[in-house]
Length: 97
Image 1 (spheres, one colour):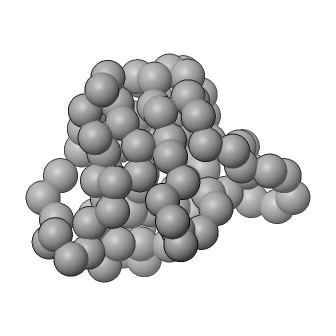
Image 2 (cartoon, helix red, strand yellow):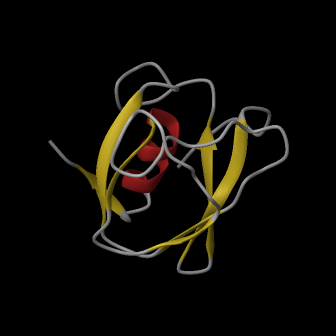
């Protein structure tokens, strides 16, 4: 994904390749912080960068706890739009209805 270095944050990795998301915009949903539901097509190792807000809980928009770690391929869950866009651009996810 192409992103300005000042707006890009590494949020994890797919198959050992760092995944950077552009926090200033998103091709998915317009608002980079909007919730976007995707299905992963690869294992995604998510990290929690310092100062970055928690991700939405798996499969829901309400209560629950998010923890960094491996999110397995096939998982359907919500991400913020900028992270979803980065996953889709990396070929590691597709939008899910």
